[in-house]
Image (cartoon, rainbow, N blue to C red):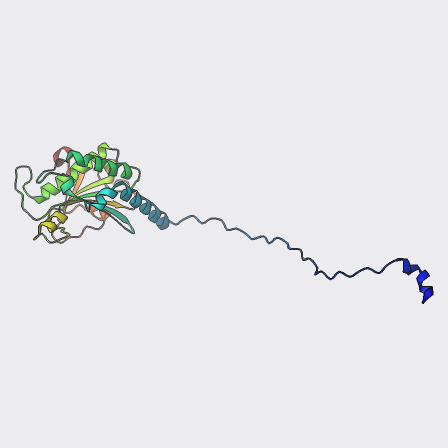
Length: 239
């Protein structure tokens, strides 16, 4: 009606209803961030052994490609196998001049780690009988001892190292072929993933284990803790 035009509410237009959807406000969600978990002793060991393996492989890659050096890792140890043909002349324990640089590169990597190192000398089955080396036992032990002495001169603590003269008793291949004998003539550096126990290894002397035929030497600490069948050599006598 016309009267409504003068009504009080007529001057106030009705509010328009918005057709836009209501805007939702998003509140931040707080999520608790867990504290980083410290690695277990085994995880830390595996990480360190993996890193050491990579360092050794990178340093020795050229010789690895030539099949003169092999590096392998197990859960509790790393082994570097070197063919003695690049280390020593035939029937000798004197390190070749060209091999010194190789061993120095290995020593630089190993000196940074606290782990025990077992240096094993291996020969083929060809007999040797000289005044210096009456048998392959003496030759293999003397070769390993020479490497220990060089490592000590390059900063590896003597108490970390053990010498093992294995002779011909741990062949990796058939000695009936030249290739097999070449494979068997080697020096193995076995780095165990555990710091040496206090007093576990003799300091300032070489610990030589003469392995019996068919014996498999798996654990440095096992042999270091038993006296039967082991011989201690003074460094001056080991060569």
